[in-house]
Image (cartoon, rainbow, N blue to C red; front, side, top):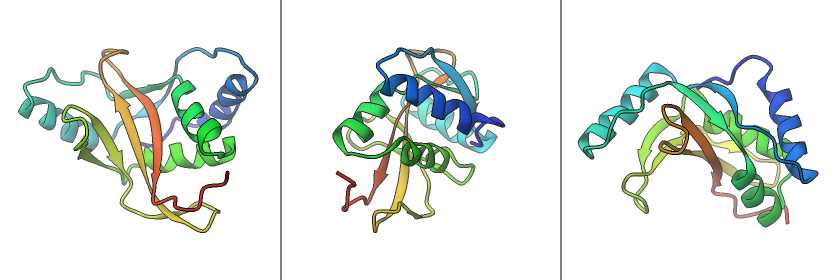
Length: 149
């Protein structure tokens, strides 16, 4: 899922608003590829869940910020890399074993995170609260043994 043009700058401002204690609005940040959308809907059909109608993905960011910055010590710059990587056109659907109905896109291409790790970014999507669109709820950099904190 490539981000919309100019979205990294918008996301940076969005996350800085959260950092300063503000409450930014939910924003549209990009679209799933046709293949990602089809994979998600194939899984949802198998689980007898309604299809994801729109390919557009929205973002609020508070949970992602709290998880990665507050808890793990990452910087906003790191979060932007996580988002871009997790929502890459190369990312593929993976069934979440912890949450059978969970939807995760995994970038199979490891990314050097700047902290001595090579991580696979997992974009966690929430598919019900922002219907008919998916919400990027968080991104988990799997393999980040050396956290910045």
